[in-house]
Image (cartoon, rainbow over all chains, first blue to last red; front, side, top):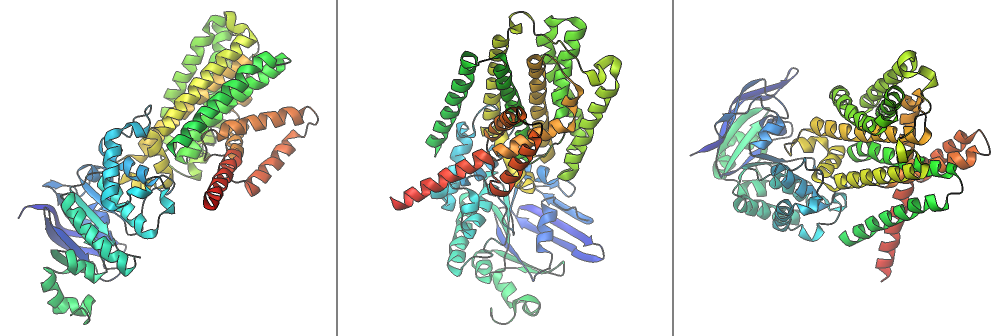
Length: 251
Length: 319
């Protein structure tokens, strides 16, 4: 197994509250895995530390063999870490196309260019269109992003991350706020994107059908600690996980 | 969509050159030429300011600093070394604005929102105080009179054409900028700075870039203005000057590229028409401002655009 991301005893406190408590795991390159856990377990805080939005108090985060624990978000993103957000994050007044095109331009290091129109950057534009097609948003390319339905905005958020051609992508509750039908579509889409873009994918999710449907490995966080880690089958049968989070009905 | 943009673009330039090109032909007096010159220069100044405010979301209350800087370079060099230094002085003004805005920018972009606004205001007022108090060098309250452009530029019509050309080129550059990757990045910074960091971009660095660009156009406006009025005064540094470009932006519409230019024209024409009849013209500006903010918050150009969009979609639904 070749790890792409390794966490070693990552610890973070907000005042007296330990939100991440000695979390260690490692993620195989090219894998797709999930983090589950009750609200307040520290899932998003963990993502914030991996992406340099927060600095851990102790511990180490290693990405592709390089220590990124103290690097800034910008530097971590530049090394190939992408992220989509729990509270959908995009550029509401820009067109759907430009939302993704700005990411493609950033990836090509072109955002400083001042005298040529964005549409003249054909590499970035073509790339943005191909991402829109993968997401099924290409027919809405010219609409302003705030006009999109919530589910489509969640996809756009993922699309912005994909524009940066990440090696690893973190998705924070990609199906939250969606109808059961949308969830099913999104689940299939995530699996498709994972293969199509050769990603290592790590996602936080509350929808157990999505988690057990597509994750190869599931990690359970509870009160900042890693409670369990294993295949979906193992997690499903883990008595600790059942009492802490899953309850009886998933069995 | 793209086609409509083209038409709007061509429409603006056609109207721009038609109106401002014909003014020297039809102007009844030199005064009208001066008025048209003011609209051009303030319009360009307001558009450059809007790169900060409307595009990037940075409300600078201190752009008068660079406007005054550009004007005083021209005034002081012409007074000290003679008319021949008029054009180089405009260049030096722009250059020194680039350097100074980089220095001040490094300080002011560290804070955002209202703190940024107050800091820019403080630097502007500092420059005003220095100019006001340093009588021997700047002429203090008296300002500098008798600033003449050299040679053929001394002719009012020629100087008008010179301004028209420089303003047109400036607007064209700003237009390219807005449509460029940097322009898109700046708009994204206004809407969602955190996400821009997750694009791997430095928010502050880009804010500094546009602060420098906007400020250098303010200096160009100041330099050009000194040749229109043939005199300069410390009020060019004063906060009311910074306030006036904000007013122009808001009246014309900060969400629109051409909005601030239209806003500048409206304010200058109101000042002129109302000012000829009553000294209380600022009351009228105040009332217009209140009406705009309460009833037409998107500004003149913004509201017209919104109306057209509604009209078009209504027509589309019927068809």
